[in-house]
Image 1 (cartoon, rainbow, N blue to C red):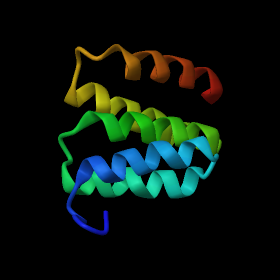
Image 2: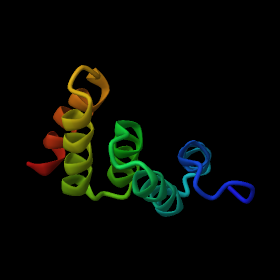
Image 3: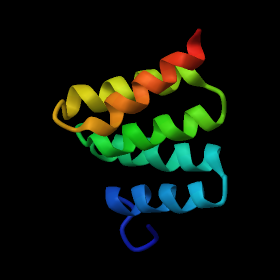
Length: 90
């Protein structure tokens, strides 16, 4: 990130690393930056949804999964997570 602050993949990978340490808010910030750099990339939306879930922010997680589905309707991961998330909304 220091060498190339416009590298979306670097922010995405940093977010995944932060997840390992349960640093969910910081993880979300990395995914937000990756999304800012490429709003058409579905993966940071899906991973952001996972981090939001871990913070108990279920509706926001559902919205992120929905955006990932919109961007890549062939990818099954966000469908499964969105369905599971909706159980928490009840």
